[in-house]
Length: 253
Image 1 (cartoon, helix red, strand yellow):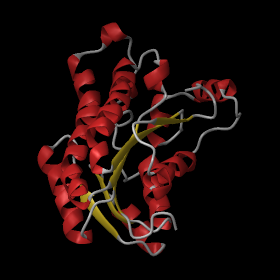
Image 2 (cartoon, rainbow, N blue to C red):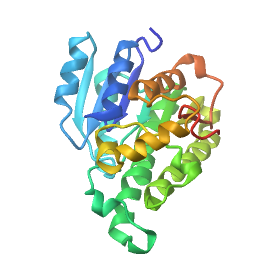
Image 3 (cartoon, rainbow, N blue to C red):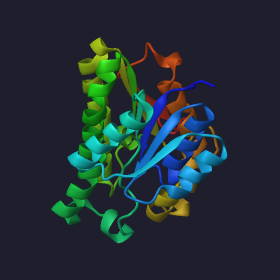
């Protein structure tokens, strides 16, 4: 097992890719804190059913208090924090009519909600765990970006901007934390039709994306989980500040 006895926090893990990440990391031997604004209890039961050790928390990543408690409760329970997977993000959870808009129709509230979760939330989670990683002399932070950070997507300006911020923050944190043996990388998925994406992207658009890929197969959360496990493992000890695109060749990065 590639993550045996490692302690990992996965945000946004009540459903979708976060749930798949949690199950995959548990199978790789990690002890987990799973957290979300939604109830994680069912995912926790799935992890326990495969023999995993798990702490489930309700955490709002936009709250400095919540993220600090997330880190403290993890360290109190497991004794350390080895891995942070910043998966929590907003794309679903907003009515599609309020999300997919021409730029001139966006209002500050649309912009603020996306940036608060996708950028501020990532920053607060990193801020919360970094002191623990510094103290133990190592750690792995894996941020979930998106290939829209590189391609841009019409009607999704706030979302693509937020994911560009994830890529930039990944590079800045890697430079800041390298001397402490903390690796910071990002995974940029292509279009993965999770529950949230199904609410925001039509079947026709999904089909168009697959046809544009070099590998003509829909991406699954498990494809992204494999990249997350790699970057969280000791095999990636000499990789930092990088963004790994997992998109079946739809965009070459």
